[in-house]
Length: 234
Image (cartoon, rainbow, N blue to C red; front, side, top):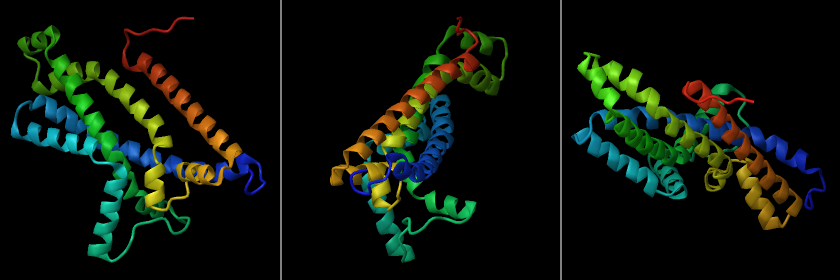
């Protein structure tokens, strides 16, 4: 590092767990809300609930994360008189959960909207297949058709987008970490660019690239487990 004159790993390593926890909570938020709401929107197509969920997903894709983060800060100050920002290292697990519980949904809202829309479109495509009509004609229950037949075949595109979003969150937390004063990798990248600390910038860019490759490799390997039709042979 040009600034601290320390090895880059000593500057970056303490910040990796902070960003990883925030990205993990944001990813969990996007999966927990995106997948079930996408399924509900698909099985209740063209109902009032479907229209409401589609508007919600479009809002999530349209609202910038920095704007949403600032609105959350303004709301918290106005109604609670406090700012939910990172002021010190949390000492317990529940303090970490409380600390990341606000910035994680702020950054995960967009990912959950994307997962919701892809889950809906993938489910609708599968529900129109011939084997779904055959299952219904044989007397299968609605739950069995939706979850055992349709969802299992519609999950591959969803897993793909979840993997892409997981890699994106590592490098896409720049604005969120800055707004909420979180000393993670993404915010450190901005500071290194501002200080023209090129060794740090190079190492952080390489780290993000490696994480992206590893996550995509894990997603490819997950295809074998999720879809028995896919086999990798040496």
